[in-house]
Length: 401
Ligand SMILES: Nc1ncnc2c1ncn2[C@@H]1O[C@H](COP(=O)(O)OP(=O)(O)O)[C@@H](O)[C@H]1O
Ligand SMILES: [Mg+2]
Image (cartoon, rainbow, N blue to C red):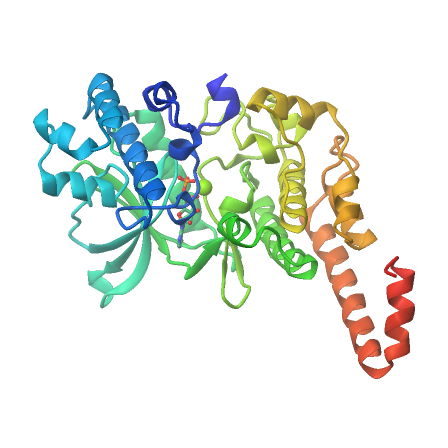
């Protein structure tokens, strides 16, 4: 079941410990950035600090640094650091370091100076760092979690992701720079994006303006077109894996699940990868021969989330969501509630068609349609500027009162 859900879920012990304390499991194992998880040491409020401590303890149990019973005792005590110190597992300085960095120590690397942690997922932590060999130029360093650095399959997948990002050259795919190992630490450097992931934008703003969302989706479609040209399927397109800067430029990130089109295997042994809320029916069924149309579906689910602020299919658990991806038709109600244009509704319906033959067949087709729509919108806006009565007529035609 776990493999069916997502390779990203932090396995076993983490969930166990947290579950036994009655705290939310997704506090620790969601792969959102650190910011959206509400806290490091300066998490600000008590809830933020408690969530950070839970996350840290879960990571430490998972790494085998803290036995589960000590973690439970620490959680129950309200002062976890003191309990760990009393058990001789760390001193105050180390506990502080763990708190600041989600249960990992800040690695020391010869070439890079790690400045701050800017993201963390199930597989890796991401840091803003300075490249000493390049006059302190800023990069993002993705560092494989120490416990995974001991697992051959995880290392292989991580290096595969790095090499793919280094080889790809597209203005909408984050640029990989270098992959290396230093001591126990396995990491790769990439272009640092000075922005946020769309999941953070959703967490903050609820939803995005329709045209802004379409402009972002268009750029991700260009990234997918590039991947398609290289015979690759991303397999984990979602708001958390798209970053945007202040100018509205978007990048697809996180190729941790990317595999060759038509190949089921890749880095996860042929089981279903991806995040259940966005995956295509054929991916939910664990089909081996995925192609770009599975990514188009996930991008459609992303668009749905961006413009409505809701997930297309909700469920009590991952199994229920997966079943809905396969069986349930998309409800148009939420889209209508949002007063979205018919065209955007159509984009979503077509991208998220259950049958891949009915979807846009390649990302370039989608880009062309979005361009056509945005150009038409622009013409309308110009006309409206020139003639206020035209504005009223158009609004009426679009169903506004
Ligand atoms: N190149 C980058 N520049 C800035 N932030 C990044 C970069 N890559 C990743 N991040 C941040 O780190 C988070 C996790 O990165 P990601 O590659 O998605 O890791 P995971 O495979 O663990 O999900 C992202 O959501 C984002 O907030
Ligand atoms: Mg990610």
